[in-house]
Length: 394
View 1: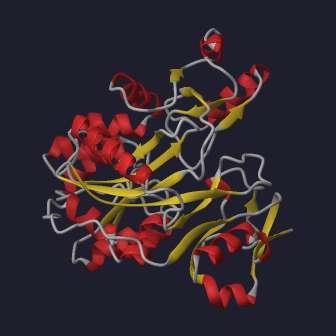
View 2 (view 1 turned 90 degrees about the vertical axis):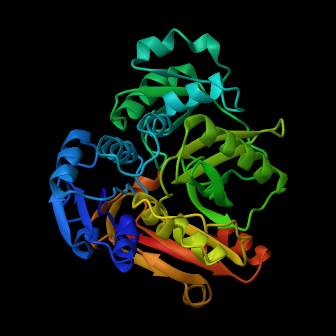
């Protein structure tokens, strides 16, 4: 298991529950997931050769990069080298790097934003006449909205490039056409079994209008809030993508948007489960434990019993976040809200820790899973969430 962070603990526990001998590795020995594994090794999950050497030495039977973009190519590389179950390394690399992914989508005539990758500010500056403002400036290999900015004037480019490069391991960034969305952004997880799209559960993202980055999601809600024709279109595009990339049995975190032209644009298809407890909310909504299938796929087990299930009930996840920068002093919940809606609250933020006013997932201090009685109630609570949940900052 590549990584032992708080949000990866669920998968570690699941692998143990399924009866496997579980080994974790990353460069953070204090990560909470390691105590649930049988064995831990201090090896970075992005160091492909070091993980390969460790996997050879330990004679592992499978590798999982759960909810981790940076570790997904490592898992595929190691498995390919050792002949273990995996989707092709080159394909996972394409899905894990925004510049390679956009290039692949454009070359294969998918509906996607116009985009191009760059190494330097000077290189990008020469191409400004290619784009109509606004545009998005993004690191090619980050997640959770880290280093992503919406550029409305070319005078912002230098600062935004520096921010993007700060969060990029490859020290590369993307400039991408801004798509004006119709309705809510589409978000959720999917799973292919031997290359066939077998399961998906898509909700819609919601945002904090008071946040400086109004495109950084605070969570997702289920069931899907838009015409289901968009899901049918998205499923068709995903199947074509998996076929072209020769994907095998794999989990995916998917982001898409419906443009004003009524077309569904693929934004992200990460070759890993979603973070922010998306697989856990999906299980509440559908009864399907996708994490079980992630483990089974990594071990080469038969996943053919995985079938599409309709969402039931009304659910959301929510990134608990500070509205100011300072020292964390706790989280306050309205008592009625707590009793009626909270299913789970996951956090490892400790009193006295530095916290930052919300910019994206890196500033979240915990994650909620919430349930509701109706769609109307769900949308009202989401709209007024700051009345029910507050991070106390000193």
